[in-house]
Image (cartoon, rainbow, N blue to C red):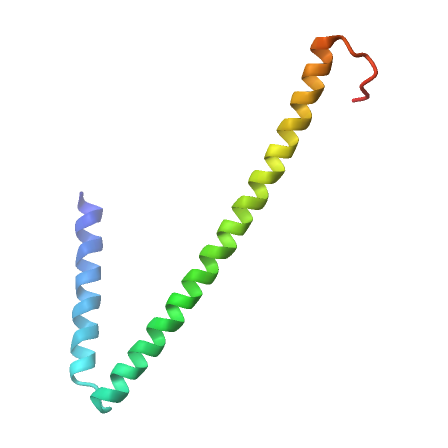
Length: 88
């Protein structure tokens, strides 16, 4: 519970600092909002890209494991059927 409170405090402090920074920014509000929107879009694109890469990687690993398990299953079935022609 202590770590949760610390994390909450850090996030609250960061949000408060960002709000104060925006309020006292030296640029016009329209420029600041545009920059915030641009950065948000950039972060969102990066996050989506990383998520897609992770999903592709996991899918590839899943297919690889599935292929290996099928091969092992076929070998075990052949052993159970008494087929001695299989080379290991």
